[in-house]
Image: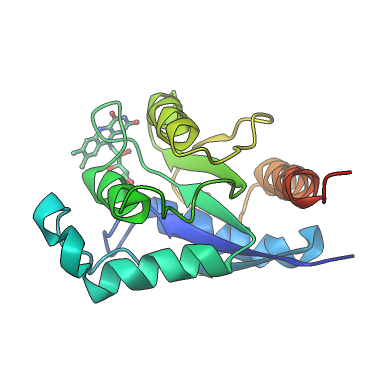
Length: 188
Ligand code: FNR
């Protein structure tokens, strides 16, 4: 089975991010699904400024190169005020420019996220899907993955303590792998 390389962008720079913990859990489960997950850091990106485009910052060039080198991108997003956190939107804006050079175009992607709220990032994920559509990144449509965080659900080192959730995440990763395989299959 081919193992696909997946760049992971976590939409939180908080030291105690529950979404980073979810990303760690997915990394632990990824080997069985035929995926190799590696985080693409976004913490040091400056705020996007159109004026900087002629002299693209090194951090933004690194971001684009890391996305280009991956077979697919996984976005693990918190929900902030029913939308995508600014740090994640900022990273996507940097990845998308200059026009015509976005490594996200044609790159398979998937969206997942966790929050303590009842709707578990559903609204943020819908906004993120809209951005990915515009960037021409074919996203995994189903299954959707809204993970409601409860105390102790995922340990600091990424162990999922609830077997039902662990099973769901493992199946979701396999669906993502199938999606990547379909999207990267040569035409003809
Ligand atoms: C939140 N939170 C939140 N949760 C949610 O389910 N829907 C929302 O719209 C919001 N809005 C929101 C705005 C802001 C500015 C903050 C700081 C928080 C709560 C959020 O889910 C919780 O803080 C998570 O822990 C954030 O994810 P990370 O950063 O821990 O990964």
